Length: 455
Image (cartoon, rainbow, N blue to C red; front, side, top):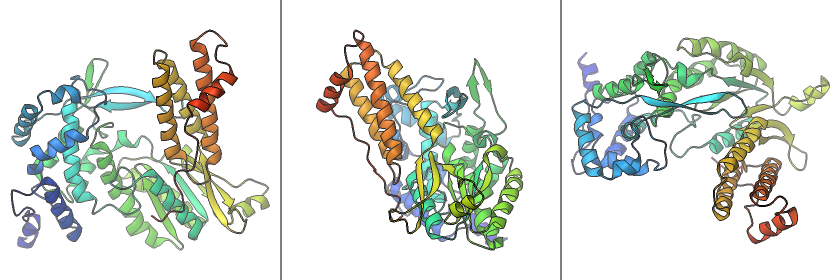
């Protein structure tokens, strides 16, 4: 028992009160890395003015306001006093998060709408501070194959890891999986238990609980859900990673892989993941055991979106023998399919913009044009350029020239059609529009990210 008590005591992470928050967080990260079982009992004191001021600078100024209608601009008019008052309430535990404002956004590739919670500005600020502190701890614990919403990681890095695995390892089968309503079904009690593996600071845990219980404001009333995380909140992605770290990642790496007869790897980005296997038996068993494993933690596999497919260097040949086409799968906005290198000598996994994503992006661009009817042409043109650069920046990956060229063509046609409507009918024919494109060129579609880069 004395040994256990000693483990829970917070060792001095800060020898001097003059040290910056960055230095303190670095010390915490180092301790977390060196001692994987250490429980931090003194973290909440780091929610000081320096930390909160830094978080304030990072928050978006154009973000939607919560139910109190406070924005970054209005909060900044009396920033010093606001931060001082906020710290005072935080450290006497008088800070009570407000309910998030529920709104709905279109769901890509579907007629359904996705619910989104918009927290109040001060709640975003507090959550941002908590994220910086908790990230210092959990970045030392998360596995390498967890890519979502983590520092120095991205969708592209997850895609590169997947390419490397499928092309260079003994992968013959893929499990494409989907967790049904993940953010709405996270069990809050389990989440706190998972946090307690590393966090013994009662104030930090209490504040997390308050955010989980803050409630949702919709149609004039507030509902307090017993399950789920505050989707749309700054802290939600981190809590999701912590939940899936314990429910999925560790189970796969520490338990399931050891029972496999062949190669196996799981690559996850937030609640979206792909599992790669050498043998069909291991893939089929994972598909079966995944539902059982997640079910222990209040999560459910979406059966219509979860399947085992043959995929890899032998998939095309085997499919031809069965008079079928080799199967494909979607991951992070791309449809992945079996192909060959340019000289035709070796297997390559290739990708193209997923049809649902493509349709959703075109639809979103049409909606934006409709809402921009009063925008000046010069401003509209610059915004279109920015949207194209953003699209090419994400979807401009190896093998997807056709996807981004098609998108550029569709956008150009829509832009011509919309500008032609602004004046008299036919005032901007295609010849005039082409000349306009010559004088004021739009960004050209090009491959921005190589799938062959070293991770």
